[in-house]
Length: 254
Length: 251
Image (cartoon, rainbow over all chains, first blue to last red; front, side, top):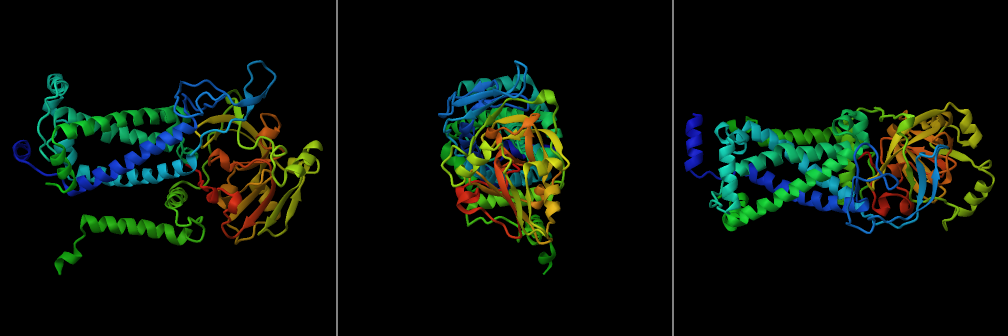
């Protein structure tokens, strides 16, 4: 039976299922909201760290010049807490920082609900309808480096096949969709939850898995970067393979 | 009609979502913060209701060791005496007397309203905890806090059975509240000591709140009054909600 299905997939044209189209646009809207509010939130404190702790009085792993808060130095009355010379200090902030987190954070979490709840439904349907097995996961024959290399060369030379208007995906396409659905997005959600003090009180294992609150925040940022790169590549490929055809296929399913 | 008896996927999903909503509503509808029709506040409320429904009630946050203590920024108000606020003068006077005349009043839905001096609070059983302070801005810091569990102080006044929220008033003219679940949490303390010394003024002297399962801005500094309330009090123009900030910040 599998052979017959595979045959049909490779030759015949099958449309995107309705639940796939709905999930696609919900996740697209949610991701765009999460990414833009995520940048707004990062602008309030554009410093990244590793471990559990990081603040303006401790060294940063990376500082991003994305708001007026970048290296602002508005600190006074530095006082050590203890006697020894290496003592941690306290300092008062005198600088009026950029901070739009009031709406930024609440909108971020609202959009996160829109990612998590439909995302779980999508994962359940993807398994139960065999969508992942038939269309998303690379098949055993496709795992060979030679196939991947050939597909990569085709992409470098911009030999992009015409749109099929359905889930008959190329090899790199399958790899990138697998990475987004099963690695980058779940990692974003898990590291996001690790930044919640109520959730890590209930599930302290999250802090151990990701190496601390600030490590989770940094991984959250790296996953964001990877997903933004994916979205750019995805949109470029949609345009190059036939924009109107692809959009119609993902909106009305024909 | 036979089709009507079929449990389709769509019907199962709708039934599931409806029963989940049904589980939440009767228990919480009286106790949810107002949203004023603002979709962002509705999202905050969904998060709050989900946390209260799905997370175990009194799990403790991680506590650290003395070596883990880090540098600690003081942000927001760093001295209420400097600010041109209604209580700045009163705070300046208390500060010059090293807070000997400071009083913390416990009022509202309690059996016997109380007024504690700093010495009164220090005579009650103390709790010392080394915890991570997590700011909404994105930074974190570890500090050691010494104080009296809020539950001891509230129970000394006698919480009336209808009380639902604990409202805090500060010298920098801010009003905020937490629910009783967070108020009675073992790590929720009224801290008068930080890193082994008296709480410094930039960090909230003489007494600040520590609510360890929420973000930093819920741990109010410079307390002078605590009111137990049956109803949700958003603090008006002096509170988070009307200033566009989430009331519940467990996330």
